[in-house]
Structure formats: structure tokens, C-alpha cells
Image (cartoon, rainbow, N blue to C red; front, side, top):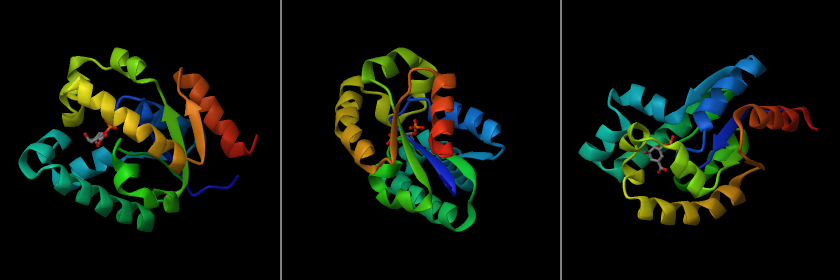
Length: 166
Ligand code: S3P
């Protein structure tokens, strides 16, 4: 399968950036993370953007980021924030979309306090779970491929197989 970009989607804490980094190295391509791009564009952390400007402003920045990617980025592995495909469903126009699916209970086990602290929408675990249940279907519907991400190396291998058309 030919592709212009590989886009990794999934809920907060599902391993998108860790997998993206390893995958990009193995594919000899570049890796970008939309949260990092936005933080660099804005010179503020995601947490600060949520606190000072609110979620709606953050979603506008994600849209701006998408337009920038669409125009400027090719042959790159891109991990996007958990809400990105929900608010920018046109994401598919920018590459092959792979949903990294992880059960919510597993995500909870993987996230330490430092990781939770960075994510305003994960602070309230009950609300985070509701958000997870709502988004799971959206991620599934948008994805070209769905991978149950149990183990980093196995997931990277599966993505490589998909890209090779196996
Ligand atoms: C969000 C996910 C975060 C970040 C922001 C909002 C969401 O990214 O974009 O805190 O709406 O799910 P990660 O999925 O990388 O944690």
C-alpha cells in the first residue's frame, strides 16, 4: 500500500507517540506529534492552553495544525491528540489512519500521575471513561485499520505489515 503519512489515533495514553517514534525510525521517516506541534507554535503547554484559552480555542489550533500538516507534511508518521479525529474528521485526507485501541482499564494502569497531570480531560476518571466510550466508535469509524495495542514492538510490526500490504 502506498501512503503519504501514517496517522496514529487513539485515546489519551494509548501509546500513540511511543509507537510513532519507533515506527518512524523503522520506516526511515520522520515523526511528529500534533500536541508538540501546537505547543511549539504557541510556546505554551497543552495544559496552559486549556487553562488560559479554553478547550474551544485548543480545537481551533488543532484545525490550524491539520491544515498546516496537509499542506506541508508527507512520508511522516503523525500521532494526533485524542480529540483530534473527533474535531477534525477530515484527518483521513492527510494519510492512512490507524486506531491504536487499548481498553480503558489498561490505559488507567499505564498512566502515572505525571501523565494525568498533563491532560486536562483525564483529571476526572469517571468523565474520562465516559469520553472513552463515546470516542471509541468514532475512532473505529474513522480508521482505515484498527490495532489492539497490547505491546509496542508487536504493534509496530503489525503497522509495518499493513503498510506493506500483507
Ligand atoms: C486530548 C488529548 C491530548 C491533548 C489534549 C486533549 C483529548 O492528547 O490533545 O489534552 O481531547 O483527548 P493525547 O491523546 O496525546 O494525550
